Length: 303
Image 1: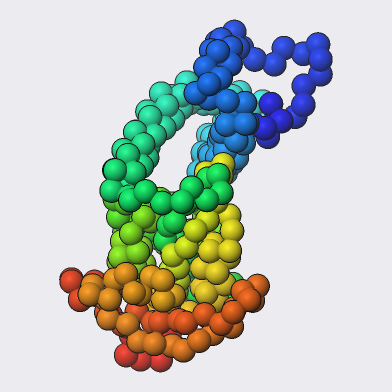
Image 2 (image 1 turned 60 degrees about the vertical axis):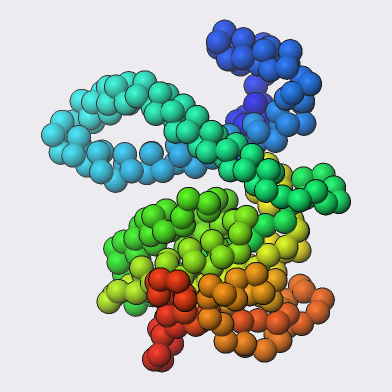
């Protein structure tokens, strides 16, 4: 229960429903396939993700539903009863939807990994959980200043638009690892897929009244754990993002040398990044040779 992020129950309290207990017993019997360490990692991921879903649902309910119910019902008792009734009707609808979406995403992830494993040549095992992937960070440039200048409503609308664009433009091979306030961290097997997605996100956010997007891409070895990635490669990609101007995608040599035929690049010199021991050769994306979905802006920096 603590791994799920819930309070530790007292010894005498009932913790799980009979059906939940049955599942846990079945998982214990599959210990060879689903060992205790994996169960705990998965529980932490489930807990964090479902807590985020619950917060988003509660916030949306409070913003969109409560004022309407309060206005209709008038007195507090009737208002609370109506909210309780609404929750009782809505909650049973969540289970099949969450289960169905989870099943589809799990099938998608397993299929992607099966294809990657079949295509990947055998190499050194490295550390447990180590993988070589390409990281893409996208972020709304100077979003705090934008929010202060345009107001909360415009800021919320811009964030909603940004995450809609990321979901739509990330492509079939992109994995959204996590959102970072006004940004997103994605991972790809192929550098070209990451760069193309970053270019599409930047281009799609180029509209009057919206903050600019900047992006960074780096390929390296990281440790995959609990649905996230850790290590120097992740930190380098994140630090590189801070150097990018609005409407700009920066990439390291590790990315550029694998997709020179697809994209045009402009060398930006060697840069010193905080927390990185050696200077890093940086390149700026100029254009997408294949479909012109991205071109570097020929104007002053937009923030």
